[in-house]
Length: 270
Image (tube, rainbow, N blue to C red):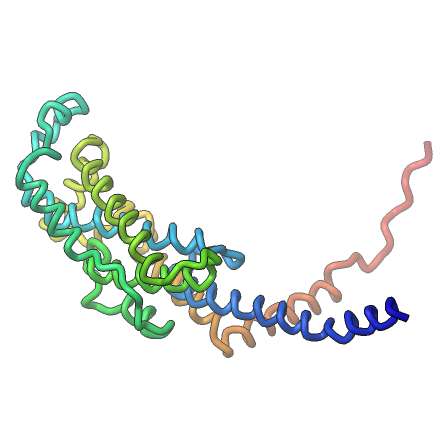
C-alpha cells in the first residue's frame, strides 16, 4: 500500500515538474533572444559563457576602432616600414602618450547593471551617435556589453550577487581592452591595418570597417546592415508568418514537383 501511495504522489507531482521545466526553457529562450537581438552571432542554444564572450568581443572591437580613430594620430609611431623587431625596440607601449590613450579608452568602459530593455539596446546599437565610419564608440560598446552581461547573469547559476559578478567581468574586460591596444602597437599587421583605416577615413575614401571592408558588397551595399534587418524582420510576427508561408509553399511544391511522374526504368539484366 505504501508503494501505491508513493506512485500516486509521484504522478500527481509530474504536471508540476513538467510545467517547471517548460517555464525554465521558455525563460532561457527569452533571455537568449534578448541577447541575439543585439549580437545575432550568439547561438540560439547559448549558455552564459557565450554572452560573456560576446560582451568582451564588443569592447575589444571598440578598442581597435578607437585606436584607428584617435590613437594613430595621438601616439608617436615608427615608420610604416617598421617590422616586428623595430616595433619591439621602439617600445611604443611604454610611451607616456600611449599610456594616456589607453587610460582614456578605459575610462569609457563602465560595466554596471543595465537598465536597458531589448528595444532600448537595439536602438542604442543602431543610433547614429553610437558609431561612425570606424565602428561603435567605447561608451556605446560598454553599455551594450553591460546589457549582454546582465542577460548572461540571468542564465548563470553561480549564486553570486550581480554586483560581484559584474565586477569580475569588468576586470576581465578591462584587461582585454588593455591587451588589445598593446597588440595594436606590437603586431606589425595590426598596426598596418589601423594606419590604413585612419588614412582612408582622413582621405574621405568611404566606409572603413574593422575587418577592412569585408561587410561591403561589390555594389557598395552594407551586408551587415542587411543581415541585421533580415534578422529583426524574422523575429517579429509578420516575419514569422512570412517565413511560415514560404515553408508551406516550398513543401507543397516539393510534393507536386519533387517526385518523378513516371517510375524509373528497371535495372539492366545481369
